[in-house]
Image (cartoon, rainbow, N blue to C red):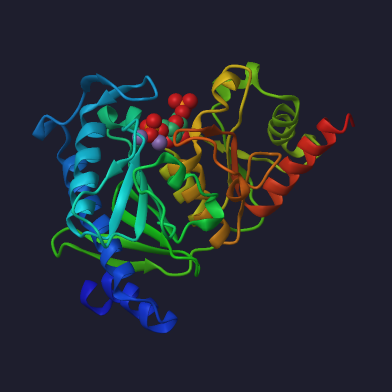
Length: 338
Ligand code: AHG
Ligand code: MN
Ligand code: MN
């Protein structure tokens, strides 16, 4: 029963008191929560509200925008501007920084992927929203892209909403990871998954295997060894999953372990990979590390990357620590000519 559970608001207030934080942080998280509830509603209504299909436009990445990409972006921009906590925002769907006018007090920067996995909207498969919160450095210009280009280790909070068979919000403010489930009738998120942890070992991996002809040798070696199962060097069978929604893959990993790979390969090398550093890789890396897992490009910790651009892409390998360590070791052996 919901009324015996802690709400997301109470969980944030509790953290605020324990860590001696100002109420600003709780207030700015509330704006994100409201935006995600609205997006959840729109995703859930789907075809009934005419929300499926293409918008007829392209985003800065040259990708066709879905109607829900545009709608989710508008909701995020509007809800998070109203509270006056953010000085500026950056989105997958916007080429440039969006300055929040009239928010002289805004001390934070918000980066987001308003709808992740949007190829799944028309087929009723899980999608999500991803967000990352940075501080506005003293004296910095919120309208300058450079102000946003801070390494992921500087994030003050990160999270995602998962619009799946139930809607969930998974958050970290740097003190572990908590998961909340939306009770639609009450309109509240309740703490259902306290202190989520990624199991160190796993028998499950996720990669888009249709790209295997493009993979680098260390990635190919890792996947081949998993596929060889009990007959191979790993000596055990592995299971494979690919939802094509990073939010859904990361959520599965937080719930039952696993490893997720979107490597740089010969097909996406010119762009640097597929996933975007600032609003996909960084927030997910913070969540996974806060839950005891690891996140790497194969050659560098994601959270240590010095960003070069708002829409920069990076290779991503994250999840159970032992598997990510193995991937990093395979890359090092390969680079060292072994
Ligand atoms: P987005 O919908 O925000 O563009 O992100 C989609 C991303 C990610 O969620 C997913 O893991 C990956 O792209 C799917 O890629 P494939 O189409 O290669 O499967
Ligand atoms: Mn995405
Ligand atoms: Mn997206």
